[in-house]
Image (cartoon, rainbow, N blue to C red):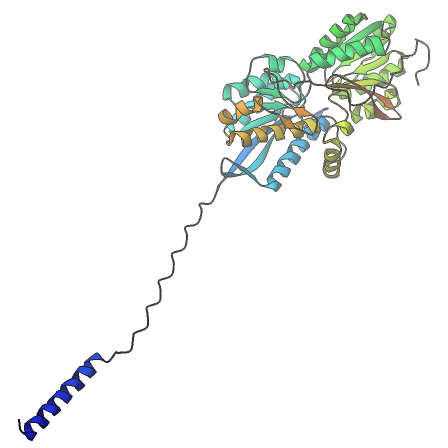
Length: 421
């Protein structure tokens, strides 16, 4: 191999190596593509928002309007409190709406407004105030399958009709009338008693039970008289009773008649003790009777407000918003709370679904531990007695349901001709 050939081969090999080296040279790497943004997690579906209508019925006009408005205010306060806390039932955000109606304490009007509430598709009804309107209305609610809880209707018939929709959160008149009759005979030394009632379902029903209790305790019923829930003049009835020299006069009815009746008793010189039930156990009775109210007696289902489990807090809140409690407000407040509690436990606002839960209620209310018997009546209802002292109702004792305090001995009525203090 000559020198020239070797040189040429060397050059060719060098060129080849150079070309090979160039082929292996790395090109700059392109920047990695930015990762695609992560897909946003799907938002949880918003809870359905629904409005639940709760009807409330009471007399908002006429002589019992002060009691009816008191009840309505209590129902409204309960609903306002529940709405303020935020309410969720069965996965839905619930706003409660009060649908108030005025039955004028008239049974016929009671059925008219009951049908009106049914047509408005309310989810439940709290009320009515009076037994005379509650009882006929209860058939309309039962036929429509709408739960009804009364905080004031005490006539036993309301829950004795077999309507699965009917409940009450206070003692009935069987319990109350028996206690009143025995109190008149034993504590007030009533050997002879006269009875007056206003012929309403409430007034007559309570008077009937009072008569049974009084006779059972050994008192003699010297006369049974009647008036009506619109009357204001009782002179003829009271004059007749005065001639019997009865020790005790019992009145079954409301404060609009009880107050003037007590006042007229004094002006006619009737010396009997005056005793009435929850319908007359109000500040309005004292206002209407004036100084004739002093020393007179009444009863209320349940324990005194300041001895109720939530009485003080309720009184403070209610009075700050609406003024002095008239009578049934704590019970109506509890009725609303019991109804909504049943909805929550059922997980539904549909009447057919939460109705069975009302019967299973075990609820600590303002007024008491609330449980119902098979008829829809409050279990273990207590009855408390009061007497007017210094222009105010003063607690005396509680019978049944666990008396919260030792009884206070009542004063026996003065004999005819003696001055009552």
